[in-house]
Length: 319
Image (cartoon, rainbow, N blue to C red; front, side):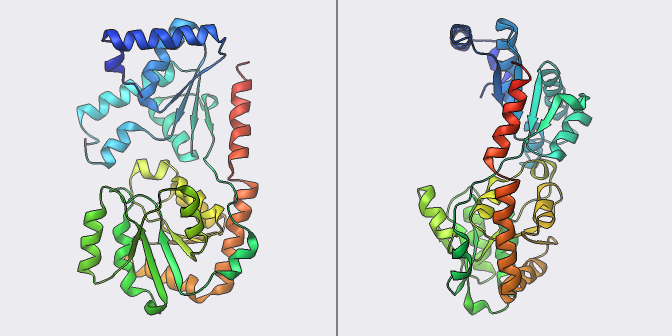
């Protein structure tokens, strides 16, 4: 990733960009693609030097992520400056890819861009389990949070809900043992006298094997602009394994859960979150139905092959 300030100065950076430019011309590249707004500065310089079209792939908006992380304030001069710079960069690009409809609307409205300049290509998954395994998941019930434990994930909501789940003795809770907020989450668990299992697997296959034995995947989230726009890939990981999903309703991507009938949305309240967990544990038919719905959604709508086809169509427009 490159920032605009760094790109304008320094022999090493200029030399590096010159090498990239030479490579692009030598290999007869047709299109430049940069990931995230912070790399768009490099893309603009390369576009001007080579005459190649530039596609900017946005997974989120850096200024909004900094606000969510409480690094800057929305009303600050820094935020305004970042937004102005992002607007300049995006207006100089030839096309923009975003991961959600909410992000598309944000980009169009905040940066005054034409709608045909922006294409929505959501992330997806691939089927990672056999349908026959869904009904064979053994007791006790396993409810897992499998993302990193960070400030934006709101894992404390899951922890605080545990004491309110019915049939607690027959339910095991799991939380990833990694992330910047892990220490705080363990303190909250101790305070509420709950004892979730903290786990970590170094390889993707072992993680998926474990998750395929679980009954519910939870995806609590903070409520901020950045989080609502950026779709967590973990959602599609759960879906690919046929796990029904429980999340607090933050709008944006969380509505996929409701629209595809793959889980339950709750208020930002531990009792309500626990109630949703209890409901899926008690209602086996509903839980299994949502598991199948999750697999169908990945097969027919939210999978990487479909996303790749949409991206190829964007590429073809510049060929």
